[in-house]
Image (cartoon, rainbow, N blue to C red; front, side, top):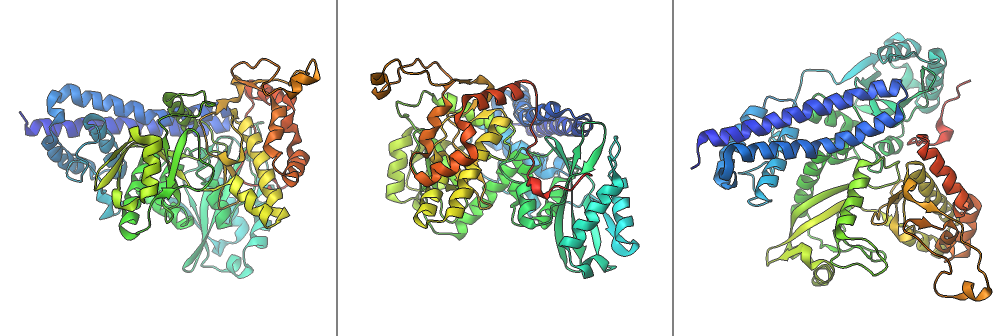
Length: 578
C-alpha cells in the first residue's frame, strides 16, 4: 500500500546518496593539486578513472537502499510522482540542483527499467530551465588594468601561487607581457577599463594545470588559457598562453580526459565557461569538467529540442560500413549513433560483451586528445517518422535485436552517441581527387601522430585502417572505432620471420604462427599501399611505425611508468625558459 512516507523516504534516500556522491567527487578532485605539485602523474590518472567509476558505484548503492527500504512499492509508478515533487523541494536550495536531478533520474531508471519516462515521474526537463543558480561566490578574480600590466600580472601569479614556488616568476611575467603586446591591440592593453578575469579554481589534467579566464573590455571579451607545468624539480612555470578561440576550444576537446577542477555551483560555472567558448555546448562543457552524466542529460534535452525544430531524416552515416557497429546520423545534428550489430564478420574475434567493455575502457582511460568521447544510452526513443524506409531497413537487417519499432517510435535498446567527424578515408579520397598535397601531407602526418600519441598513452588501436579514424573540424585526426582496441602493454610486437622458401611468401596464409595479441608492424605498410603519394608521406614522416623495435621501446617507457607529455597545443607555441 502506497504511503506518503514511502515516497518521502525514496526522496530522502536518493538525496542522501547524491550528497555522498558529491562529497566523494569533490574529495577526489581536491587531491589533484597535491598530485600535480608532487609530479605524481600516475596518481592523477588513477584519480580521474576513480572519479568516473564513482557515479555508477554510488548510483547502485542508492538504488539498493531504496529497494530495501520500500520493497515492492518501488515498482508503483504513482509513488514516484510525489517522490519527485518532494525531492525537488529538498534539492532546490542546493547549488548543484541540476546534478541532483540527474542523479534522481539515474536511480529511477535503474529501478524501473526505463518505463514511464515522463516529466511527472522524473526530470525530463530541468527545474533550472526556469531559473538560474547564483551562488553568491565569485567564480573569478578580477584584475583591472589601471595599475599597469606588469603589476597586474605579478598580482595574478601571487594569487595563484601553488605550494611549490614559481621557477622564475619574472621570466614568466616577461613572456606574458611579450605575448600580450604581440597578440592584443595596444589600445586594449592601455585602456583603463580593461579587466582580466580569471576563474579562481585551477583546472588539472594529466601533467598540466590550467588558469582559465578572459580579457574583458567594453562589451567584448577574449578568452585565454595559461598552461602551468611542473619542472619535476619542485617548481612550476607558465608554459605558454592560448587566446585564439579555436585553440581554447581544443583544450576543452571531446577527445581529451576530463578536467579535475573544484566547482561549487556547476550551472553558474558552466555559464561562465560558455561565455568564453560559446562554440562549445553546455553539454560538452559539463563533460569536460567531469560531470559526464549531466552532459548526457543536457545533450538529450538539446537533441529533443532540435528534433522539434528540424524536419530532416535519419540516414546511414557516410563512409565504409563497419563490421561490428551499424552507424546512422541526422544530417542537421553533429553526432552519430552507433548500435552493436547482431552478428559480426567472421574476421572479428569479439563478442557483444567484449565490445561494451572496449567502450568502457575508453571512457575510463586517458584519451590523449586522440579518442572521441562517447555517451552510452539505454532505451532511446526516436520518432519513426524521421527515418527513411531504407535507413530503417538497414538498421533492422543489422541490429534487429536492439530495436522495437511501432508506428510512432523506434526504441533502441542500447547505443552510443559520438561526435560526427569526416572519415579519414573519405577525407584522403577527396584530397587526392583535388590533388591537394598540403591536405594529404597534413592528414597522413596527423594519422601517424595519432597512432604514436595513443601508444604513449598505452593504447594500441588494433584495426588501423583509415576508415576507423576521423578528421575533426580543427583538422585533427582522431580514432573512433574501439572494437579491437588493446592496452599497448598487452601486445606482442614481433618481426615477420623470414620465409624458408619462396613459395611460403606467395601463399595466401602466413607461413608463421600467430598467437593472440601478436602484432607484426611490417604489415602496417598495407595501410598506405592504396596510393603512392600517401605511402611516400607516411614512410617519410612515420616510417618508424613499421619497425617492431619502435613499439617495443614505447612499451618499455609505458611499463616504466613514464607519462609522456601530450599537451593540447603545439610545441612551437611554448615560451622560452632561458
